[in-house]
Length: 221
Image (tube, rainbow, N blue to C red; front, side):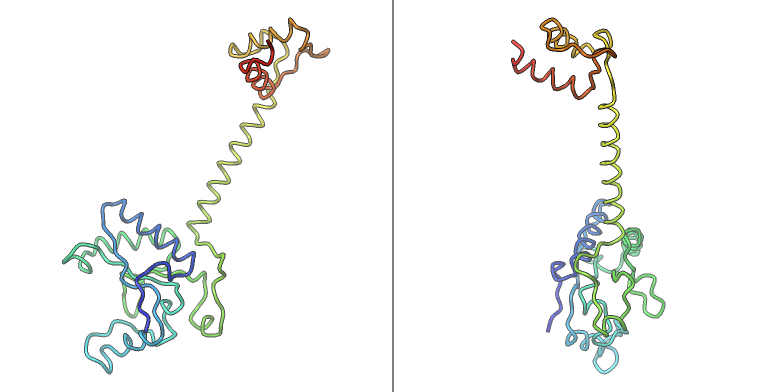
């Protein structure tokens, strides 16, 4: 019987999402614990029986094979303070908001049996799909990861544009050269190593930086 609390038993993208959600909640000053990740059908059957054919209150409407926990696509959290594990609605409402922003489905929005500790991500897969053998691809990414990648790509693109702009800066005369490169250019011109063409020196920013680095390394002595 399996009733894991280890996020490493989750699908890779759900595992990353669980770790990120815990970090985001913790950043608001709330200690977080994980109470359930992967469950097998045997344990799911035991949970489903509770409040029906076994003592206790009903805690799930999901029969074996009908819970996202059975596929490593869901996990449950609690507030990791003794006596406040399940009672702090502010904690769960914050967690729900943060989780939904990341792309999780939050159990606090369930209609039939509200389950505020519960979070799941399936990329649109339904229980019927999973029962039919469909699975979330191993390389799947959650929305928050895709947004992060887009931001990184935008930053990379911005850096590229800046680099390109720097490469297009042309210094045609010694007077146009920045102070940090003037001595080097003057030295190269005096030695006849830098003459330019009919349009002037035509030094780019990158060329100038290379010349200055070489000069500081003693290559033009």
